[in-house]
Amino acid sequence: MRLGTMDDSAPTTLAAGAREHARRPPLLVRVAVVVAAAHLIWRLMAWVGTFFPDGELSVPHHVVNTLVVFVLALPMVWLARRYLDRRPWRGLGLTLDRAQWRPFLVGAASWALPGFAGIAWCVAMGWSAFGLSVSGAEAVAGLLLLAVLVLLFEAVPEELIFRGYLFRNLNAAMGAWLVVVVQAVLFALWGSAIWVLDSGWEVLAERLPLFLVMGLVLGCLRVLTGSVWACVGFHLVFQTVAQALLNGRYLEVQGADILTVVAFLLPFVLGVPTAMLLARTRGRWTGRVPDPAPA
Image (cartoon, rainbow, N blue to C red; front, side, top):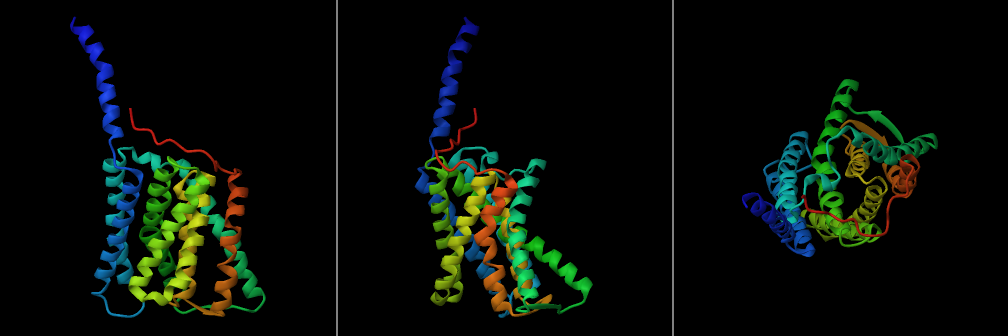
C-alpha cells in the first residue's frame, strides 16, 4: 500500500512542478522588465561617470564603467532567467564550453575580414594613414586592455541581454526572421535613448540607424550560428577597432572620415555573407523554437 501510494503521487508531483514552471509573467512583461533594468543599469553607469572630470573617456573612467555594467548586467539576466522565465541558463546560448570557440571566431572573423580589407584599401589608395601616438609597448598594452574592457563592458553584457535573453524569449513565440527585426528595433531604441539622454537629440539621426543595422546584423549571426558567442566576437572586434582608431589615444589616424565610411561600412554589408561561408550554414529562419522548462 505504501509503495502504491508513492507511485500514485508521482504524476501529481510532476504535474505540480510543470504548473509551477508554467506560471511566469507574459512575454511582453518579461521583455519590458529586462529592457527597463538594462536601461537603469546604464543610467547608473552614467551617474557614476559624473564623478569623473569632463572630457574624453579616460582609462580609469572606462574601467569603472565596465565594472558597473558587468557586475550588474550579468546577475540581472540570471535573475530574470531564474525567476521570470523559470528556465535554465544554458538556453540563452552563452555557455562556457570549448565548443563555443568556433562561433566566437566566426563572429570575430565576420567583422575582421571585410573590416581589415576596407582599412587596407583605404591605406593602399592613400585615403588614410596611421601612426603610433605612444610607444610600441604602451600601444600594445593599451590595445589589449581596451579589448578586455570592450569585451566586459559592451560585447558580453549587450549581447547577453539582446541576442541572448530577448532573442531566446521572442524565438519561443515567433520565427527567427521576425525575432531578428524585433530585437534590432528594441536594441536601436534602447541604445539611442542612452545616447540622447547623454548627448541630446541631435545624435538621434546618427545613432538610431547605426544601432538598428548593428542589431539586424548581430541578430542574423545569432540565427546562423545558434550561439550568442558569434555576436560577442563580432561586437568585440568592431568596437575594439573603432575605438582604437578613432579615440586617438594609441594611434594617430589621417583620413578618419573616409576610413569610417569605407572600412566600417563593409562589415555591416558583408558580415552576414561572411558568417554564412565560415559557419557553412544558413540557419533556421522559420518556426518557433520551444524553451522547455526543466523536468
